[in-house]
Amino acid sequence: MKADLIWENVACDEGPSEVLARELGVSPVTARLLCIRGLGNLDDARRFLSPRLDDLHDPLRLAGMSTAVNRILAAIASKDRIAIHGDYDVDGVTSTVILRRALELLGADVVHFLPERFRDGYGLQPATLDRLHQDGARVVISVDCGIRAAEAANRARELGIDLIITDHHEPGAELPDALAVINPKRHDCLYPDKNLAGVGVALKLVQALCDCTGHAHWLPAFVKVAAIGTLADVVPLTGENRIIAKLGLGMLSKGPHKIGLRALLDVCGLTGREIDSYHIGFVVAPRVNAAGRMSTPDIAARLLLASDETMGEEARALAEQLNSENLRRQQEEAEIVSQAKKIVETDLEVGSRTVIVVAGDGWHRGVIGIVASKLVDAFHRPAIVISVDGDVAHGSCRSIPSFNMLAALESSADAMSKFGGHKQAAGLTIDAAKIRELRARVNDFADRCLTPDDLRPRLWIDGSLTFRSINEQVVSELSALAPFGAGNPCPIFRTSRVEIVDGPRRLKDRHLKMAFKQDGRILRGVAWRASERESFVAEHKGAIDLAFSLENDTYNGERYLQLSVADFRAPDS
Image 1 (cartoon, one colour):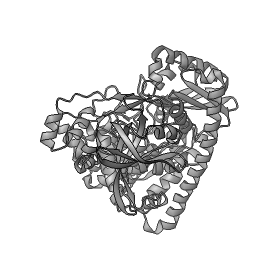
Image 2 (cartoon, one colour):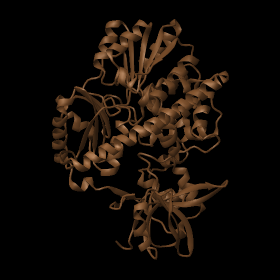
Image 3 (cartoon, one colour):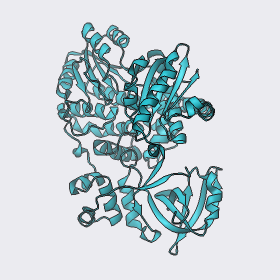
Image 4 (cartoon, one colour):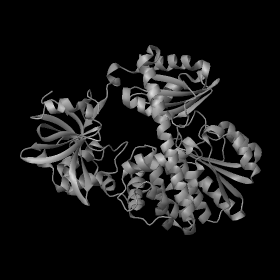
C-alpha cells in the first residue's frame, strides 16, 4: 500500500441513477456504480448485470471474417492442411487451443505452431511460413499476432499459402497483404467492440464457424477457455469481454471439464472452488505463462488440448511441469527485480528520468515484462526493462494510464530494430549500443507530454459508504458487478472517522488485520501489503478515514463479509 496516494473521486452523471434504481430494483449504491461505468442506459445496464451468449455480436460483422470462414470451410472439405500460428503467452495459447479444437471437431487436417521466445522470437516470421509450408500447410491462421507482419504475408504469397491473420494489436499504416485480416482495430472495420483480446478475436472466428456449420451449441465450451486468455490479457472487462469473462468464470467454477483443464485447476488448488478473476490473473495465468517464459509454450497447449480420459497421468505430469516452471520463474523474477530497483535507486542517469529504462546483461527475457510491471508499481513511472545478450538487446515495456508507450516507441522508431504492442505494454529489439539513445529519446517524448501530476499515483473513489449502509442487497449486487479488472475496477468506497477496536495485527508479516467500528457496527478487515504503515494506523486508532472495497471470505466453510482496505487517512486530511 502506498502512503502518498491521491484520493480522487470518480466523475459521474448521476441523472439516470434514480431511473436505474427504480426500474432494475437495485440499490442507489449499485445504480450509481452503473452510471460511473457509463451504463446509464437501461438496456446497457441490464446486459451488464445479466450477460448472455445471445448478446454476442454477429461475428460476420468483422471485416475479413466472411472470406476467412469460406476459405477454412473449403480447406476442410478438400482436406487442405491448416496450420494455426499462435503466441507464447496465455492469450496466444488459449487462442490456439480453442481454434484447433474447433477445427478438429469440424474434421479439419489441422496442426499448430507456437513460437519459442528464444529460438523463434516474437510474432509471425517468414522463416516460420517456410517451415509450415514444408509441413504441408496450405492455409495458415495466425492468432494473437501478425497485424504488422508484412514480410511474412509477402512470403506466404510467394509460397502459395493462404494466410488468415487474426489479431487485436494496433495495426500499422498499412495492413499485411494476406487473404484475410481480422482485427476489430482495423481502421476500416465497423465492428462495434474494439477491445477484444486475441482470444476474443479467435473466439469470434470459432463462433462464425459454429454458426455456419450448425454447431452453435458448441460455443459455451470454447467460451470458458477464452475467459482465461481474456482475463490474463488485462483487456477492458466491458462489452463482449465481460460476456466472455463472466460466463466463462461461471462455467470454470461449475464444470465439468476435459482432463487437461481439470489437471490445471487441480494443481492450482482450485478444484471445486468458485473461480474468480483473481484466481485466473494470479494463480492460473502465471502457470500457463510460465511455459512460454521459461521453456516452451507447447507444454501449456498440450495440457489444455488433452481431452481423452486415458491421458490422466500425462495431463497431471504436464500440470506439475507448469507448476515447476512457475516456481523457477518466480525465482528469476525476484532476483532481477532486486537488481533493477538497485540501479534505479543508485544510477542518476536511470533513476532521475521520467521513463525508467534499465538494462542488464543476461537478464532472463522470459520475465522482464513482469519486472517492468513491478517497477511501474514501485515507482509509478513508465518502465522499459532490457535484457542484453552481446550486441543485441530485447526489451519489455509497461506504462501508466496517462502515458502512451507505443507512441513513445514510434517517436524513436529508427533507434530500434523492431518494436510493437499496445499503449500500455510493448516489446522491442535494439542494438545494445543504442540503449542510451533510446533512454534519452523516449524521455524527451515523455517530458513533452507528461506533467509531475501525471506521475502521482491515484486511488479512484466510487463514493461514500457508511457501515450502516452495507446490507445484504448491496453486497449481493456488488458481487453481480464482478468480474473486476481493467475497465470494470472493483468499487472502492470511502468512509470517515472509523474506530479500530481490534488490532492492527500483522498477518504474514506483510499485511495488517484489524476490526473497525462505526455507528455501533463492527466489521473486520485486512489492509494488504500495508505492514509499513502499522505505526500510523495505531496512532489513529480512535478515528481514521478508510478507502475500502467489500469482499466475501471463507473460513472453516463459512462465508463472511470483510473490508479490503486500500488506504488510510487521518480524519479530515
